[in-house]
Image 1: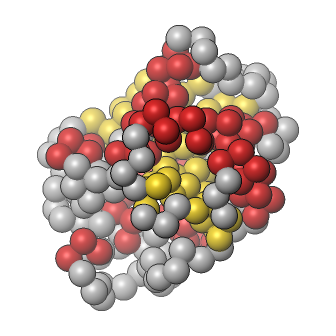
Image 2: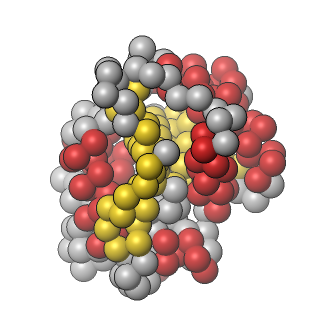
Length: 221
């Protein structure tokens, strides 16, 4: 895979985007990880996924282009902190119609205004430039699930056949300014938020979710 820097974090760390861009591809797919830096289950999975592609252990279908940003929030990932270096929850900072400056806990601080953070701007650039057929954002949660936004219940059900998680259209609490709302509902880009079991070991995550993720690559072909 090739690599480019799509932006820089608050602390000027590069936000790296890996890609395999096929000229004959029918569409592109975007995987995101590390939006919440304390959810290492997601970004460690994606980094291993990239490495397996590099080692030719995973093959990408010729008819798709795959783009992976394993650490959207490198400052948070480096210290396993949910928020970025400005203490902003990046999954509440996207410029959605329901964005609000109200928050119930410090970890949900949405920032001073929508898209105030450089990491959010980088996310928006990726979505705009790549124009993905669908997005999978890798998170973790005490109650694992396949959260879907937009027209992708069918994709969520296919993934569930492999990882045995329940597809849910509602995570169970309000998420204003989230990627699911921004991309899935407002831009009509089907968006899966894969909520991996929090605290699961990297090997267990890999075993449970690899086939589900691989199935997504060919789902719309």
